[in-house]
Image 1 (cartoon, rainbow, N blue to C red):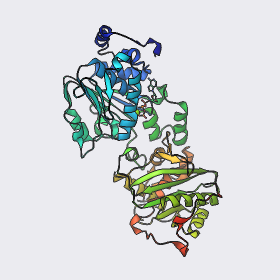
Image 2 (image 1 turned 90 degrees about the vertical axis):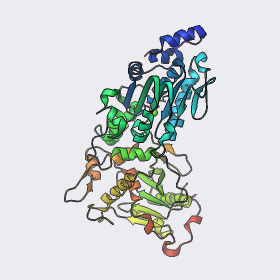
Image 3 (image 1 turned 45 degrees about the horizontal axis):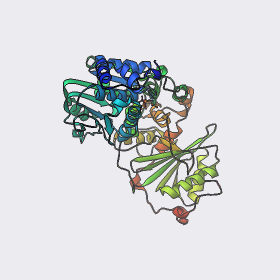
Image 4 (image 1 turned 30 degrees about the vertical axis):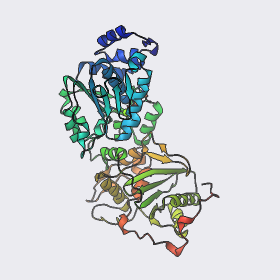
Length: 487
Ligand SMILES: Nc1ncnc2c1ncn2[C@@H]1O[C@H](COP(=O)(O)OP(=O)(O)OP(=O)(O)O)[C@@H](O)[C@H]1O
Ligand SMILES: [Mg+2]
């Protein structure tokens, strides 16, 4: 790696023309000298690959600097080509506007001023000030139903940039294929390798002759903190699917190894859905048990999971009063509490205070599909998988540690890891999910977050009676927050 002092700070028009000529296909020099972006070795390889190849596909672990490379590539193309068009897409608006566009803006600000001042912004578009209609990069999400958002890009120079490419659906790729440059067409695809089908997968397998494929492992990236890697290894094991996808930049092992396929969870985590306001809310409460100190409360509103809550070092009375306070905010129609161990105390407390609490003993027989699952625990895992397979809901990768605190982004993706790590067997024709003891034996942490989320599928919502308030206590919705317990 070189250092930022090599940056060219000022230049005149003549020098600029020379730089464009020299760096026409030298993205690493452009990154270093014009933007002040010092690429890691991995990033340097990807930038150099784009100099030589029309289509480059980067699969990588989390946080290795994909968005950085995409931003630099866009700035280079905007600066060194005339009248380029650069359609940029990703499966979610958040990824596009809050991540990619934010990164592009950060590096644009740092560019050599002569280059920087040629361009301007809107929320969607990064463009040449004098030719905004013909010289631009544009950020557009597209869906199966509306792939046309990415149709109709024609120019001498076209570059397609696809972020989180594993999650981009096939009709969108088909439409993007039509974005063609008369003199040059470039394509940069980047993503975590989450799924075993689709264009991104094929770019590293069956169609690998048409792409320059590159793999980045977090182990070789200076931008990834060692603690991140250590924690994933410690929680889920070095061979888990989450370690493959998020650390090594490898595709997950075939479905069948773990009960819930990785791609289903990842899709649900980043899916854009209409907020489910007004839909019924249910809670799933997994209470800490012996030797295991985390209580998790999952909240599902219709098909949308809200940030979950994690409590540590609390007794059953404190946990129950926390759940009651949360219930006063979200007004659930049902609270499913795992009653094995200390959970029974929490359920009793909620129930007798008039909350719609239902004690769930996950070691009992399945409630609805006794021919498919061995126990209720297995059926709840099945409920989660079925719901994910319907591909319409959203999981939330954020959690709260107190009632009034802001939700925290789970950068270690603990919920994704917990949902995708347990394996399964079908010993006597019935599905059995890997037990906590077996998970522990292979040093995988107890999936408390997953269990709490699964509990929300304890019964189909339609079967609840909203007015079934046990013991006729006063309306719980009017109860104040429990100040005594400190919430
Ligand atoms: N060359 C660089 N110099 C300085 N900081 C960098 C560089 N490349 C990336 N970073 C920083 O490292 C962090 C991770 O980079 P980035 O977001 O590009 O990774 P990513 O691979 O896209 O992550 P994700 O897997 O979340 O999509 C960001 O904070 C980014 O600003
Ligand atoms: Mg990224």
